[in-house]
Image (cartoon, rainbow, N blue to C red; front, top):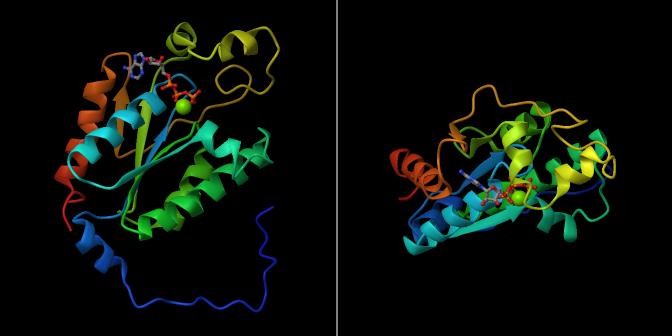
Length: 203
Ligand SMILES: Nc1ncnc2c1ncn2[C@@H]1O[C@H](COP(=O)(O)OP(=O)(O)OP(=O)(O)O)[C@@H](O)[C@H]1O
Ligand SMILES: [Mg+2]
C-alpha cells in the first residue's frame, strides 16, 4: 500500500525556511504523538493541551483518530494493514504541519509499535514526542464513553484494541501519563512543562 508509484517528480523548495516560520511564530514545530487504548484519555488531554497552548499564544492543531477517519482516511478500516496506512498518512500530515512550525497534537490509538516508530523515523529527532497515555483495559472499560468496549465484548465490533486486537505499549516514550492517577488537567500541564523545558515554546 505504501509502494511509491509516482515517477518524474521533483521536490520544489520555496524561499521561506522552517526557521523563518518558527521565528515568526515564536515556537518550534513538533508533533506530540498521544498513543493509548480507546478511552485512555488521548482526545480529552489533547483538547486541554491545545487550549493551554493557544492561551499562551502558541499555534497548535489537533489531529484526532475519529476526525481523520471522517475525511482523509475514510476509505481505511481497522485491519493491521489499514491501521498501518492510517498511521502512515497521518504521519505525513503531521510532518507537513511540523514543517509549518505548528505544534501538532496527534491522538491515535496507534497500537502497533512498528507504525509509531516509522512515524518517529520519518519526522526525525526532536520533531516527534511520544506521549504514552496509559490506562489498564479494566479502567478503560469502566469509562467506556463511546460504549465501544461494550460492543466489542458483545462481539459487535471485531478486532477491538485491548479486547481481541493487541496494544503494544511504547518502550521509550518521552512522556508517560498514568491516567488512573493523574487527572486530565494535570496531564496536560505535564505536557506543557515538557515543551517548556525542551525549548519548543520559543523560537
Ligand atoms: N485522568 C484522565 N485523563 C483523561 N481522561 C479521563 C481521565 N479520567 C477519566 N477520564 C475520562 O475517560 C474518557 C476518555 O475518553 P477519550 O475520548 O478522551 O479517550 P480516547 O483515548 O481519545 O479514546 P479513543 O481512542 O476511543 O478516541 C473521558 O470520558 C474522560 O472524561
Ligand atoms: Mg479520541
